[in-house]
Image 1: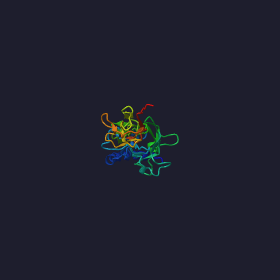
Image 2: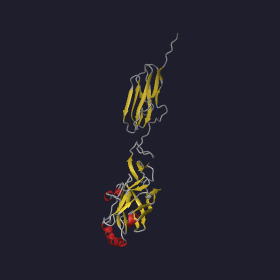
Image 3: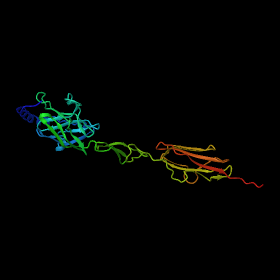
Image 4: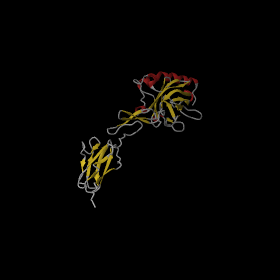
Length: 317
């Protein structure tokens, strides 16, 4: 609804007298900023009411008056902007019910500002306070974090130029990095948050959203071996293995030999120190030994095998 010239003049005078008191007595906390949202900084401009402060950070006054607009991770906008002439402008859902048309929620959808804001000094008689954030042929958009375009605030505010407003919302691809062994996520708003801290043997790896575990490795060539590999019937052999990054391992022989370790303290399993290895039962026929392990990554190893044979006995004819 249009205001007559003298009505508008009276409104400005009255607003100028009371708005400073409102600012000092009623700080407006940015709800989405408290919940990890991304702030909108900078200013909007109206030819009729002048500069509109979109965030207290613009003037380094947040310690005294914490206000501003911010964008939650789903794009919903909340909080307040401030005009020295008409006071608070709200983007909070609780102040936007009954908007003139369409969806009332203020929102940054992709690169487009949508929905409504409302000046709280509206009197419901000559001025309804509604600010349309998008319409036919108009609406602020973002590119590279910088806004451009206009919102519409009817006769009191008129066209609201957003070209001096900025945000980091939507300017980053989701990525994962490491701070020591702590996985950190950079979200679409360029906010960095800790995900989890990896505990050895798990480790953080840049680009991974979860802790990784080392693969099973075999430091000693041969993985599993028998020494000697040929013995006279009734003799024994020594069975050797060396495997790392495991939680359980079992060596079994076709002659009934078996050795098992559960939860090696250092996740490494060796047959024995020195050159003795594990002594087999007396060998009376060919025996094949098989090593199977479960890695700290939860995967089963490929079977490792080694065979001991009986020394042939030659007889004269």
